[in-house]
Length: 344
Image: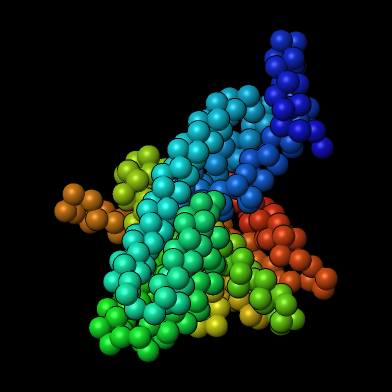
């Protein structure tokens, strides 16, 4: 497999010779885009979600017209640029939350001065640790670090309880504030902010746990059909409402022990603890649910919109890992989508 740089160099030469890019070059370009979705976007989930729809359209264009692949390099470059800007804003937001937590602890440490030296020193040590943590590169590292320090903070509060009743009252309040902020970070790290269902990170964690348990596992992978047309015709506000409608349908049609998640853009997945036949029945029920009338609210009026989806259904095979299972689900879903396009 050639690298994306080699592909771009090769593409430039072949344009001069008026030749089409080789299949290896096209495959390398497609793989580079998919690797960015799988390994780069998850570092900043909120920023990556904003770019998923554009990436999906680029991949569809590559699949539909491989010989015209040169026209997608511009949109791909613009998508990466937009992601970089959103990621920087996301990181700034996360660090602002850390600094707020540090300020809470600083106030408590200041109030404890004059009490036992051990408690004051403990707070100063914790504040130093949080200062280091504020340089965390992503939300997951930040969340794990804060959770790690919760045990230390509880021990320090217990120590100050023995020092002075007034400090006890203040620190109990500050502790509640601190735990509330940690809970917000926990929810943010596991939930898709638009639809309210699980996000990619929470799905990957649940899938890893399911694989480790050796239970029956199946996946339903969905991609909305015609979603770009809804955005183009009615606007992104309508598109967001369609995504929420679809997420609600998934949540209503699965059991409590199963998990529905938004992977990004208009791509969703359901993790089921059942064999293939049960997963196929569940997928059919969800598609039947989509046949109901759906409406979006625009400028004070309700506008009917059709919601359709292509679905890939797979069951975990022996000795198969999470990446291979997801890859098969993706291939099954795309096979359905291609068959619909080629149907008369």
